[in-house]
Structure formats: structure tokens, C-alpha cells
Image 1 (spheres, one colour):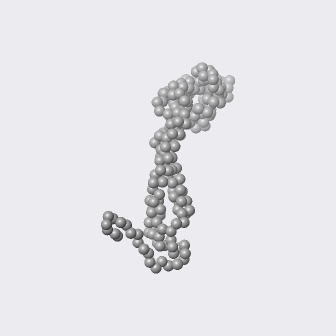
Image 2 (cartoon, one colour):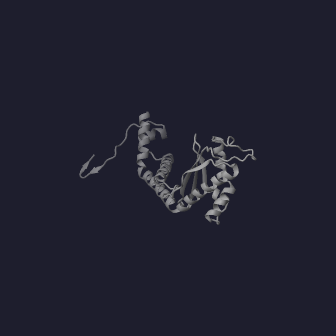
Image 3 (spheres, one colour):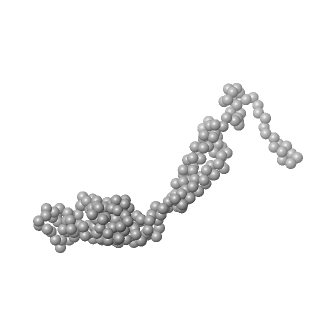
Length: 233
């Protein structure tokens, strides 16, 4: 019985193969059009900072913060990560670059700060419509942040490891990924369509359908006759 069900299931989908292929192609086409026409390309650039321990750090004895208080640990990395996106830092970045048409809140949305797990590395990533702006903002943010650390903690323990470079490829557009995603959606929709269409189809196709529909046994069936030239089968 299981083999018959699997065979019927296969035949059900095979009979709708044209519709299935058409639905999948439609979704792929929609996905490509969406990514090309309606998605604004965004470019990302990242700069990496490292927390280091320096014997030449100058400690202000009038403050309660000492070198041991700001030792290299995960808590300090987390604090620094939040400091990068503070209004004080972003306001100075905007002023230095001369992008006065944006405010701190807008710039903050374009900046992502992440701490590399189990390290003292901080990665600052900036996303912008213009690749040169993304790199410029990332590098300026790193410079301003290191200066703010000196002012606030009176210690020079942040160094720039890698400067941001201009990206040539959008970070938010991946045509292969989009095609696979929309094709997968098309396959799901096609499966749903075939199942619903089969449920709504009440036509009788086999002798078993007659037995199920009328609860009577089928004694005989007349085969279909195909004409092949002058021969009959």
C-alpha cells in the first residue's frame, strides 16, 4: 500500500511539472528583479583595534581609575565597544569628516562594533551607500575613539591594527544566495499549489477512485484505444 501511495504521490507532482517549474521560475525572476531594482547596494568597511598594556601609560593619581582598573579583560572590551558608538565620539567624527547633513543617531545605525571572542580585539564596521565613505568613517571613528580613551581613562592602551579599506562589492547583495532563497520559496509554494489543486480535483482517474467514490467494486474496465496509423491497440 505504501508503494502505491508513493507512486501516486510522484504521479501527482509529475503531472504538474510544468506548473511547478513555472512557479519556481517566476519566484526566481521576482527575486532577481527585487535585488537589482529595489535593493540599495550598501558597502561595508572594517577597522580592527587591539587593547594593549603599555608600561609607559601615564596614570592620573587624582582620579580613581588606575591601570589595574582598566586591565585587558572582556568587561573592558565591552565598555569600549559601547564607547565607540557614543554621541561624543560620533559627533566629533561627523565634524572631522564634514558630513554635517547626518546626525549622530543616523550614523550610529550604520556602525557595528563587535568584540572578537576570547581576544582583546574590537572590530568597527561601517556600512554606507558609498564605499569610500564607509572606509573613511570607519578609520575616523577609530582615530577619534583612541583619542577619547586617552582623555577619559588617561591611558594609552588602544592601538589600530588594521585600517579600513574601500570595498568593491556590496555587502547586502548576494545574487546566488537570493536566487537560492527565492527558488526555495517557489518550491514550497509549488508544493502547496499541487496539493491544493489535487484536493480540489474531484474527477475520477482510476478504478480505485470509482470504488472509493461509490463504494462498489469494479468488475471490469475498458482500456483506452490509441490509433497508430492503420493499426489499433
